[in-house]
Length: 195
Image (cartoon, rainbow, N blue to C red; front, side):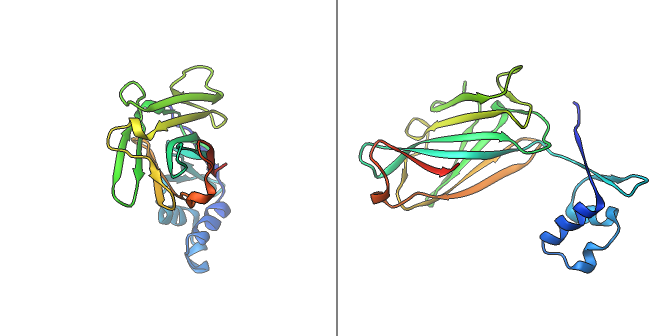
């Protein structure tokens, strides 16, 4: 499998470590020590630049919920998905989605052929393999019809929930959202959580 690497200067690594809560003294360590602190795999070159291996990863670029006829629940979620900058290609059928609700969390298999209520619609890119995100410009919409997915119910109003996307042999993306109060929802309309 091909591995992409991203070149990061020692100063960039130091600033990233500083953001994560390390003191200035810790941030002035050598680039090799600093990278070890962040947990990234790295090597130091003769010019004291660090190459950090980028994992396979995806992120939510947008989230829209379809509102039911009564205007009191989100019945569908449309997740606009793309690669994390510098990520290796990701096969969409390998993803595992977790919808975390106050009562419970539900795992959803990302393979559309094996999961009722999960549909994939291509937005941009994806010219070669229609099931693999291979470029950061590729965008796909994952439609989750919550009432058609086993063990998942539509999400009520005024409830916080999380969406986690696990990429096997890669990273875990997790984001929290809050459904609005019922009076803010338009019956049979859409609510934009993240754009």
